[in-house]
Amino acid sequence: MSRVLITGVGGFTGRHLARLCAAAGDEVVGNGRSETASVEVAAYLRGDLTDAAQAAGVVREAAPDRVFHLAAEASVARSWQDPAGTIEANMSSTLNLLEAVRGHAPQARTLVACSGEQYGPPERLPVDEQHRFGPQNPYAVSKACVDLMTGVYADAFGLHTVRARAFNHAGPGQSDAYVVSSFARQIAQAEADGQSAVEIVTGNLEPRRDFTDVRDVVRAYRLALEHAEPGAYNVCSGRSSVIGDILAALARESPLDVRQRTDPSLLREKEVMEIRGSHDKLSAATGWQPEIPLERTLRDALDWWRERVRAEAAS
Image (cartoon, rainbow, N blue to C red; front, side, top):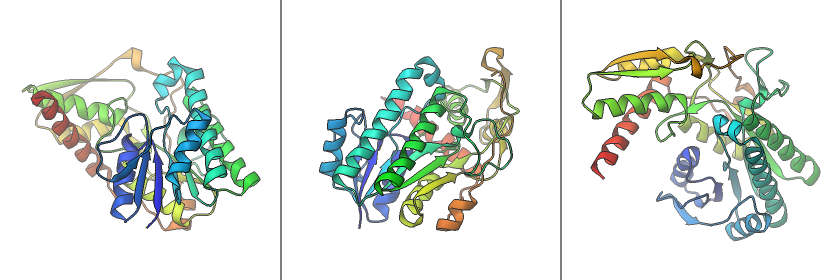
């Protein structure tokens, strides 16, 4: 049994990771903005990672064998509203966390969640770990910086750090700020309201994106920290799906007449039409393969929102 520290444990990915680690017999210690009700967390440590002293206190008290650093300002849209805040928060929390591990748990293996957004518009497909960085938004800039800094702590100080460059992921429990969950919530709400039809307002439905189920993502994280050498690893499905096909698949799971309307204000300039990654390096190091089909991911996301909408109506 390992003692595992998960930062951002109350978030979408953190909750799934806590569940996976606890099921494997790990003792899970959590840190985040608010206490999680998850029974998988054995202890919850308060502390703002953007403050160096508090970050040191969290790691010292956790005394971890494994660290998963998931805490971040993760919204691309919000990063445009506050570029400096996003970059500062993600950089300082990661730097303080790495310094705390170096000072108080230098033998701990540490995974830092990075992002496929770092690569920007692909020069070739699929995108592998050798692709140059070309971030196109403040969030991606922050993650590129975090990635580089994490590599420095491995090279300069000998920390065992894994940089997990996760592409789009989805599944039950995700915020409706993200496309799959946004579609699912609107359909679930319309069903609960007794409507016979629902109109989903979207931007461009033609782009193709690489989606992985969050439960496959956290399994990749755990395997990478256990078996992979320090370095960078893409976490992705290796397949791209048209956004319009995702909406159509969700519509097939509902009795509603699901209609769609394109809002010109939601269209992005210089939209990247296809993003698809390669997970060959991760698979070679760990044996990991994505297992959950996209159809199940979408169905489970919709069912989660149905339960959430019913619970909100009952409260």
